[in-house]
Length: 524
Image 1 (cartoon, rainbow, N blue to C red):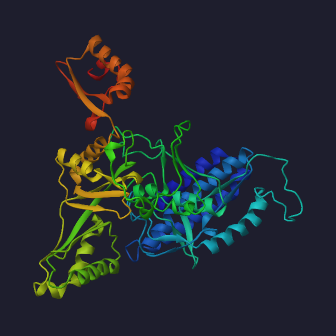
Image 2 (cartoon, rainbow, N blue to C red; image 1 turned 90 degrees about the horizontal axis):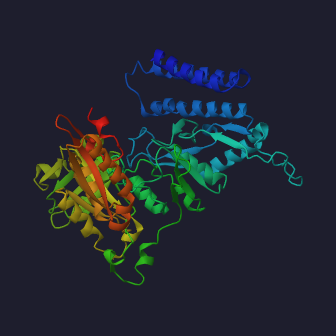
């Protein structure tokens, strides 16, 4: 552990000293070395208990953000930028409904861990930092005497480098905002300083209609409402943190998701609330979504992998209301994240969807709750699926009062030979979710994506004997015509296999090869 920590520290210090001179980095290096000693002391103390408590994991993982923020601060200061470094642990105070939840799984709807900011205390600390540290570093140019004008001799905007991800509890214990929590940090600070906008720089061109790794035809969504973005994040869209939109809603602060590697692309803007169900239902008119040509009712399709189905069957003797109360009570008592719920009232049977890594704990909790009923055969069975499952969900404000949306979704899955195990629709009518076997998830995503014309009809092409000038000429023609075909005829051509008399090359996972102009290069 000590060797790994030393390697991480020296690597960070090497980058720090490369970006800024010693007069700037000396104090930062001293702080980092002190941090490393503290981390080592904590890690070494764990040898006695031979386990890593979630709280310790959070404390240690937070130092990556802390060191990175100080490194960026040093670089900006060296370049003459008016800047300051803000340690969020000194400002951001939060409470957690489950302090022992750990970091959460990446892309999981449970990754927030029930963490919420204590706004009054946080705002007070932010103001104190701004008036003391901000003025000391020169980023607060407002005079202490309100009657005196601000110093505007240097009109360049100051930059405050704040650590994302980390926070502190009201008891002063360092904690985090859980997995991918830096997004949440950004929107929290945006609300604190009444920001005009928030820009989240990612490695993708905004929020996509689906995961482009699983649906090659997915594309960037130009705009989303806050509610749609939260639904997509809840159901696994890893580009967003499930709670990140919440601080921006009251002040209607727009959130932009853009690509750090493609800064000229506009990306996705998230702003505004969806209409409430009562507002949508006021006129009582229902229309088939296909009648509104050019208007697609959904914004995106997403999935949550690694889930399990926990089912209680045949509890009619007990009564549906009592069964539901005791069932959900047992889940809450065991701190199980319930992602979906379905209930068959005629059989008093309930199925819930839980994260796969919590499946056995959920099963044990439920069996304990209904132990007496099981022994008397008042409950037929309690079971947990053994094969991996996945949630596939469609999300969009346009689904409300639009008939045929669920039919199109289910029909697309049937045509793709995907079996549906569980179905649930949100009361807001902004999402419909199903549970399928994990091995069918990618096929389900692609089928649903095409069903709502989020992608044009794809024609798969295999070129046999495609060597030399003929094959290269055909691929060049397809490249030249692909935009015209998509625009005028609404279909795309995907060359996903090329073969000569001795060798064949296929795109991995059905990936299109139209970007390759030189066939000989592939078949060498």
